[in-house]
Image (cartoon, rainbow, N blue to C red; front, side, top):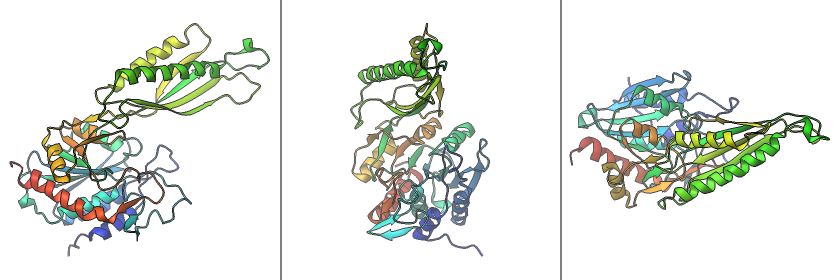
Length: 387
């Protein structure tokens, strides 16, 4: 006998209780398959056609595509199944136990963003495939918090095919139609170590990195003068110097120095062009010296996202929420879904201030409004798509 899908709180409890951390540090990185399998079972019970798609790059992780109804077009409700690592000892609640207190639900992933899946499934559970004039797709991905390999795999496969997408990242139920992109780069300055009593015995990589730092800050000023978009709270591209290490002892000339930084470009700025400009600057900066600088990309990078305000999904979200579409600085999987031919918005019940924080929570008063909103979007784009 088929077991009914769990209640909303039961689903949320099981999602939060199932660890699925992704990290660029192998000691923290975990599979997301247990979360995917939970959702696959629930959605299969609700009549969805369910596909679990292991990643080619990481077969122990997977994406899920669950479809209710048939045909072209339709609506995707999308999210990522992974969380960031947590700060052990800084939580007042067990991060893997859903805890209700102070009109909040505490737990790792409640806001960012496992909680969205429970709400999306709750919104979808009252519909049958025969209700759908265009399909409803629930999409769950792997590794958004680290490599974006799940989203990249979808683009490689060319799936899913749909017309519109809602990504349930934490936005406080305010629609987002634009966000910045991101690249993370390393600069290595190679010199030659030697005894510090005589500078001629080596080539100091730290001194070379001093020039690199100055040039990066000058480049940042140039980019911020050339690219301004006042729809963003921070209306210019940002460049953050995040990590530096060089040398090993005060009495040795530093032979190698390494810098890590991120750059968050505005829509319209091309990641490849930025890296080309950076390489050109680095090549000329230390020319004629005994030092050499090279750049290494730490991640592939995520493009900026821009869905036009006249898109039907943006206009519907603005009307239903009562908020104009906004722009944010953080990245999502939106550009990848847009690359698949969808108009995508970011719209979820959590708050970005809760993301990646100890005692992450989802406010109880966001739950029913989110379910109602998602059902209205399902009605608009799946059941009455020609309206």
